[in-house]
Length: 548
Image (cartoon, rainbow, N blue to C red; front, side, top):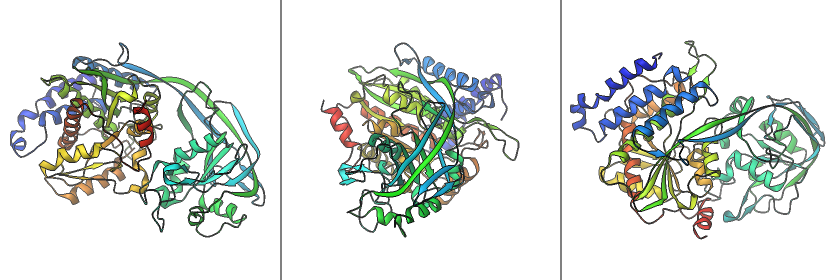
């Protein structure tokens, strides 16, 4: 699609009138057709080639955030950050180049970067080295008091490099451990790195296994190499391990076998009496870095509450995508991100419009936040969560919208990480009278709850909801919906083909957005705060926060 902004104005006018021309469908639908038209109009702009794929630090960012801020302003929403619609997000781009990894001792070997292992660092230095760092197998690398689990118990890892397994002990376990096949945050690779740093390890290497990781080794080879964006830190990330990396299962099995660990290493690591195992080997590795500093922006607006303005309901969606990259078979190199995530931003803007025009203003404040750099590691939402404009203990909930399906209305909805907090119950209460179903993750072991912006709010204790339209197409049935979802995942997800088309059916997006609006209205007029369910790894954080 190669429209310019003048063309877009004409397109916007055309689409704005679509609702009035669709009276027959409106009679048979529960979707807000005006909302659907608004969403379609916003996607047409946000996924236009002129925005250059909405990559942070580009002219595409400048145009994108200006468009979102302008829409907030025209809706009459106040700037959300002390008189500004923007929150600066300072980031550093680190390109790490690892030399071959040398293992000496019982497991003597030379591992090739990008083939046997990948490794990088968050430390903002030109070069760094591991020199003869003792290797230790630390099981799953988990410290989980609520599950009675501590792989680091009695272990001093200062100066050492820990080898840990992906996912958590519950995945495919013979007995009930953790959350069974549903991944807890303790299974997420980001947690493994964080915990190893807390323990004082010099390095941390995760053993890749396809089923518990939910993706193949080639994903690691592609995604964990090259330039990476991180939030800037005052200590230049010196609080993190020197080295963070992954190792192929084949290379890890050979290494572990030298210490007598053979067969099913997951079964070995989930024994009740498991103790970390010194591998009688050391590792040496040199890494060179290229560093680049810059700032991106979150966009933020607020509708102040009439009675409890200090209490906020937060709507989030990430505005960024991948910019201009490798051309596809058709020669298209612009990654427009129409579904991912122009749809989410469009839905937030549509929700903002409904709040702005409603007669009875909310008693609590409503904050609308379009965040940057989700595709680079949820960085914009992480920055807000660690630098909140509004107090977290007064933030009622985060309602996140990301990659809504474009094949029309559905009779079911999907909650990522269903069962985590009380917001699930609100959604079920809203959908039940309509006869709609609410389902959870199809692949709970993949850890989807930790892969979008809502997670950074969960991580600091704020109840967070990530809601999607499901697969049961009202007009064409569930098989059609599943086929459409499969087609998107295989043919358009993170590819230039994820672009705007006038054939997009945004009524399902409007359904989801309207549910989120209704949920926000309910929350905004209550005096209570939703909480985390028993067994959630985020409950203790929220309880401590609210009891101060």
